[in-house]
Image 1 (cartoon, rainbow, N blue to C red):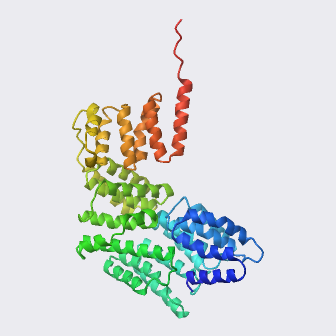
Image 2 (cartoon, rainbow, N blue to C red):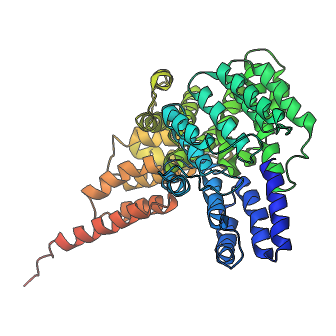
Image 3 (tube, rainbow, N blue to C red):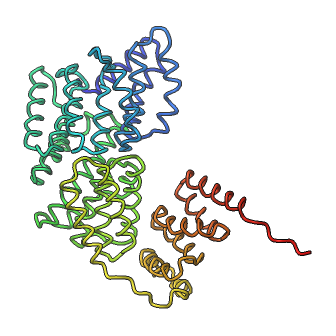
Length: 487
């Protein structure tokens, strides 16, 4: 039985038993989780929890309800270390040391922890995931709604352990187990095959597997958010496969360009971003997609999101893409910032062999970018930039010029303000704030510089930075001597 069939039947039974509010929650929460709609989950959850305490409500309902907010975070929202404590707390409650299975029907608490580990650093957490899978699968069997999710998690773990051939065999074996019970193999398995085949460099076979998903139709998925999420994933996976095939000359580049989903899909659903970025980089390398500052802003925004939520390996991969593309278009400051972000991410992952080599290559590409030459003296730069027609403004070029001018005038509040402005445009407020902070700490009485730094911090939602700035300015005011009185 698929999880969606179980959910539909359970919601019907609850409604017939007089628990209409709980029936709505059982039906809606999983759909909202698939869409990553944390805000609506937060609204729906409190009354559902109160209803779950009513007499006659199934005992497993509280744990079931609490599963979905975390599922939204570690699934569509692709959160890493920030969600791990909640995922592990649910796991500890459901899988006590006594070994008794306490998971609610249809889902397993291990699913959220497994997804979280995979997002943080899939290859680095292979051992942890394998141990958790061994423990969780002891409580499931073919036909159980949680069985496919754990089978797919096992296949993903094998892929991350550089064993994609074993992942294909694992999916085959688990599908055979399901068929042996008279059940129907869910088409979700096909996504596992797509990933394993791609890691075997069998992109054409992976594309054929995607075709089989579409040929099977979308009927197995409930209409609404769940079906939309599945279709979004099909589109972005196809784009990633076709972009690589086009780059290697195995399919028409026009097909790959046409397949790239609208940027808004990946922007709204963080789990799709690595695949979209990989497709975009391959198309840009082929000259089929414009590699401009707007693409740079997208990758910077996404990689910084990963850094904030503790998705270390996606942050590393997105930062490397951002660095390579920025170096290719000659955007030195953006490229150097991306390399620094990649270095921070590399320090946080456990397995560094392959990405360390990728980082070295990206660093070399950035180092090969020609140095910035100021067209006028540093004192005259801003006046020159103000004469540029708006339609010709390139924020990355302006940033490089301002950064090149600052060593000549490190305490020029106007230059620092300009860096803050262009940093906000390029979503590099964290990097722009560094020279602003140095100046404010040296000269806390410079109100223009302090206000510019405050704008940068507020734009970045850096509440800790705002508190530090207020404390810095307050402390400076307290120790500033009063001017002597004239007698």
